[in-house]
Length: 201
Image 1 (tube, helix red, strand yellow):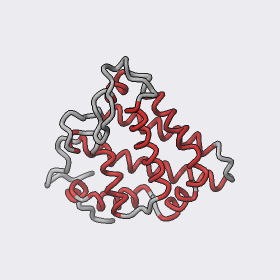
Image 2 (cartoon, one colour; image 1 turned 45 degrees about the vertical axis):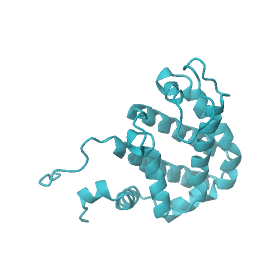
Image 3 (cartoon, helix red, strand yellow; image 1 turned 30 degrees about the horizontal axis):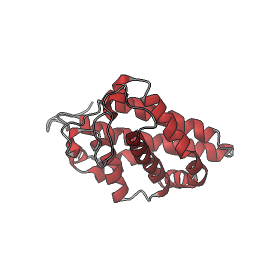
Image 4 (spheres, one colour; image 1 turned 30 degrees about the vertical axis):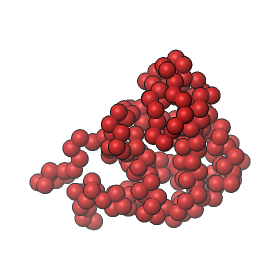
């Protein structure tokens, strides 16, 4: 039985990622499967991104977060949620970010820099990223990641992969997105970490 430093899980992102990856079984073969899908997924990224934003525009609870000025965006901003359209320059800007995220998942090495990037994906949607006005509710982040996971699954199922490669690729992305989900949710915890005297069992 391994001994896990539970306090370190909350303070050391690399340690947390390593623990999650080992527990879930996310390893070299999974990373190879994800990287191996890059060539077939790349032409479909734009369609995936478009589908995500159509979904986000279906609900005021998700669409409203695109009305305020976004970090790094210097173009015009919509006057209201009703004035915001899918072809607005602000949405084009946000789509670029999501497209780069998906491309990053299938091209970059899964090293310390990548772990930091995956963690920042969660942090940047909260006030912890430096913008006190930005806080996307966790329920909306969960809904979005669930939609992205299903869209990726549907895309992979339609790529014409052999049964073995398809299964390996689906499982690899499934594990990765569970880790990503944790690296989002951790930034919403008010009081992370166990009591020094708490014990499981």
